[in-house]
Length: 349
Image (cartoon, rainbow, N blue to C red; front, side):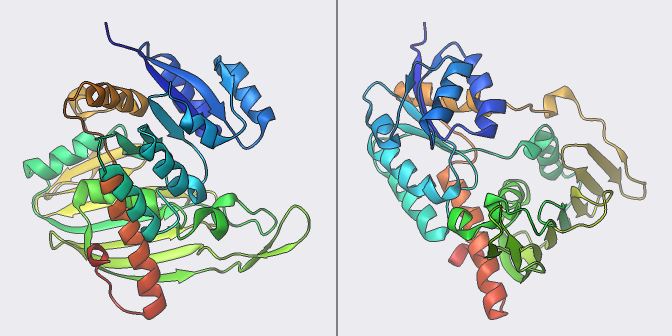
């Protein structure tokens, strides 16, 4: 019989309530013992809703508990480095919410801590849009059905930044650092599917430079609201990306990826439809077999990896800290290119 793993939660927010905690509750070999949120009131509410025995007032005390095998970190990025390193140094396996860190320097510190012995599972929560079609996309690329990749187009369009009277925490550099819109999670997806950029050039824009907070105070917005990227993948394929949070209409907002190969074309509207066309044919809904679909079971993947690690057996999760460092390099390159007007090689940063 598999020994039960014990877990602690720091920052059990919306995604913890909707995904992580309900899914963990279905795993017999995992038990959440403690939670530490920003306020005792919110910790108590989560503890009551999910039958968590202990409420902790200080996340440091939670990490120091000798009875915990792993820690879930669900805070904003500004705390990811400190909490992840503290947990790893305490011998805890770490599940950290996206995005990885405030900047590349912090991400490197997190990876260094993860590489130090003993081997500990480290996972950055992947975005839901990689499911359910990631196996199918990888199959098309690996099997040659798309043929050699020639071009990649990504469009991430939304309207969550339009309201000048609403400031989301993701618009505040003191909480998000260098993170921009959904650039990081799509960079992670692109890295996993088509590989990282060899070179890129970027332009950034903030058309709404100031917003008014709930107290009526004018707040400068330091995080770009529109991003344009062009580049070249290591495979030789060209890539173009457009990210915006300022779409004015209600029909355009969408996340869409186009892969152009010599033998076919793939269009994936993330979270919606996936289409494929062989050479000389129009795009049509793809027939994706069940064997090439993968539903969300991130929590189960993490728990299984921890079981393997504790048994001294090889484990693998995606994205781990090393994989996530690649998208932090891309974010750093985007800022550097926009600042200098020069093309940048992300993997050399």
